[in-house]
Every structure is written in C-alpha cells, then in structure tokens.
Image 1: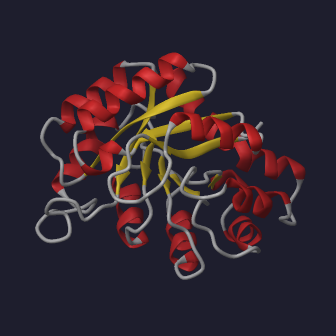
Image 2 (image 1 turned 60 degrees about the vertical axis):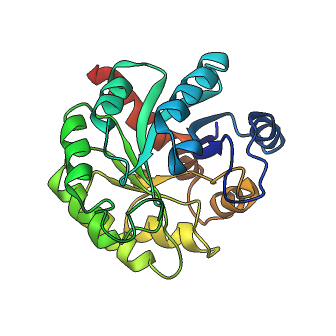
Length: 250
C-alpha cells in the first residue's frame, strides 16, 4: 500500500498549475497511490474556513481514498482554535497542516511557527495524538524545539533536503515524536542516510502532488538499500500507525 501524506488540491492563486481533484485522482491512479492526506490550497492564502469545508466535502465524496487536514498558516490566528476543535471532533479530518507562506504579516511581524499561536495549537491537540504536519521551509531548530516542548504531539516535518539533512536528522534524533516527510528530498541516497542515522520508523512518504511528480519520491524509496519491511513502513506503515494511535485515543 502507498499512502501519500502530502497531496494538495483546489484553486491555485499564485501558479499556473492544475490542482483539480480530477488531476489529483488521475496522478494517483497512474502512480498506484492508494490513499492520501489532502489539503486545500485555499487555506494557504485566504479563506481557510471555506477551504476546510471543501476538504471535508471531498473526503465525504471519496471516503476510501482521502483523509483531510484542517489547514491554515500562522498569520491567520482568528478562529484557529475553533477550527482545531472541529478537526478534533470531525472524523473527516485526520490531522492539522501548517502552511509556510509570506501571506499577510508572517514574513514581517507574524511569528510563523515560533509563535504564541503555534504553541496554542499544539497545546490544544496535546494528548489527542492528532498529527501536525509542518510544511517545509521552517528551520529544524524551531521544529525540533516545538517537538521537545510538546512530546505527546506527533509532528510530521516536511522540507528535508540535501542542504539541511543534518539538521533534520539531529532534530529527529533528539525527539521521538518528530517524523520526517520526504517530498523535498533531493538526493538519491537520502533514504539510506535518513534510515541509517534515524530509523525507518521515522520516515513518512509524501510527494507534494500535483505540484511534484510522485515518481521521484517513489523511486527513492524503492531503490533504497533497505529491507522490504522498511520500505513498507515508509510507504504507509508509519503514517497508518500515527493515525491508528489517534483513532484509539478518541
């Protein structure tokens, strides 16, 4: 089974990219991706309330194919508490996603993830086992600090690449609740290095589809010099384990 933790859909305001659900389904079928955590791209830029409603509608239409992420960026602090609460109660939502964006004041005055707002979200979900997906671009020293402060929250961090792999590994070594998602991994031996210095149990498969072609991430896992059991963990087992813990905790 292949379970993609990082799939986007919706109306793209910035790039000329087809993010329609039809395109997402076409790419998933062509690459044999069985299931996905989906996020509405609208939540990155503007109306996250509407965006999350649209996510819930898609999950309701394709319950065997998708689970949804309650999503926003940390410059959007109004009503976040209510949205997190909705995510905790509504079975259509399996986690929270924090976008990295310069929208609003986040690049100037906003705190990003190193903020009161972020800590409020993590405190709200602490003990529930709801995973929090942090998009790439944030420093791993900050991600690791948050994981340390909230050890009961499973944190899935994207943005691992050649230039920051050492920082990502050190953050994961220091925090058992920190998982590394591979959609930006840009070196073919990256999986081998991550498994060697952390564990296959700490790596989460994700593609960034449909921005990225899923083929690169799939090939990196399939060609890695690790056991088939470890490949299965990366492709689906680790993510299913996180979601199962949350389900049992409800």
